[in-house]
Image 1 (cartoon, rainbow, N blue to C red):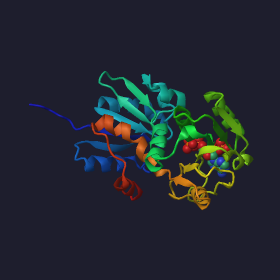
Image 2: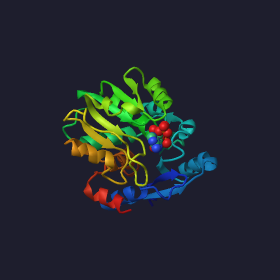
Image 3: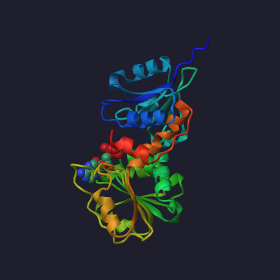
Image 4: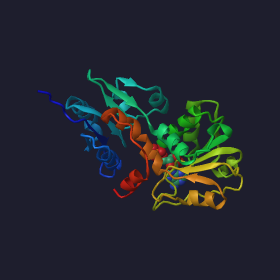
Length: 278
Ligand code: ATR
C-alpha cells in the first residue's frame, strides 16, 4: 500500500503572526487543488537551529525564513546558492532527502519579476539605478539590479557608512551618494527604488522630488502599506511610471512554492486580493 504524505512547508520567524506567507501559499494550494500544507512556525533565535533540523526530520520539504533569521541561516546551511551568498542572507530553505539544508535568496528575483510583470517596457540596462536605503532589502535589490545589467547603481542612505559598506561589497559599479542629494542623483536613472521604511503607514515620508528624473524612469517602492506610497504618488504627479511593492513579496514566493509543491504558481490579481485581505 502506498503511503503518500502531502508535502509540508512553512515560514519560520520570530514573531511570525504578521507574516503574509501562509495566506499567499494557502491561496495557491487551494487554487491548484494541491494536497499540501503551509504553516507559520515561531522559532526564537535560541531554538532556531534545532527547530529547523526538527522540521527537516518531520518531513518538511522546506521553509521560508524571515526576520530575524535571514542572515543566521547561512551559518547553518550545508549549501548556499551564489545569489544568497552574494546577498548575505537567505529567505528560502530546502530540506534535501539526505538531511542536508540548502539556502537560497529569492528576494532579488521577486523584485525584478515584479517590475517585468507590471512595467513590460522597463529596461534596467538603459540607465543607472538609484537605490535609497542600505538595509537587508537593499542588499538583495542592489544584487538584482547589477545582475540584470544596470550599468551603475547609485546608493543613498541616512547612515552613510552602511551605504559605503554595501558599496564596497558589490564593487565599483556601486556609487555612494549623499542622503541630501537623492533628488539630484535621479538624473539619468532608468530605475528609482525606495528600500527604506519611509512612507509606510505611521512613518514619515521620503522627502524628495522627481524634477531631474528621465520621463522613462521607472519608480518603485518596497513599502506596500499603503500600496500607493507618497513616494510613488509624487512620481506619478511628474508623469512617471510606478510599480508598487506588493508584487515583490508575491514573486519571491514562486520558486519555493514550485519546488515544494511541484507547480509553478501564477502571480495575478486574485492572489493580490487574497494577500491584501489576509
Ligand atoms: P530591511 O532589512 O527591511 O531593509 P533595515 O536593515 O532595518 O531593514 O534597513 C532599514 C532601512 O531604512 C535603512 O536603510 C535605514 O537607514 P539607516 O541605515 O540610516 O538606519 C532606513 N530608514 C529607516 N528609518 C529611516 C528614517 N526615519 N530616515 C531615513 N532612513 C530610514
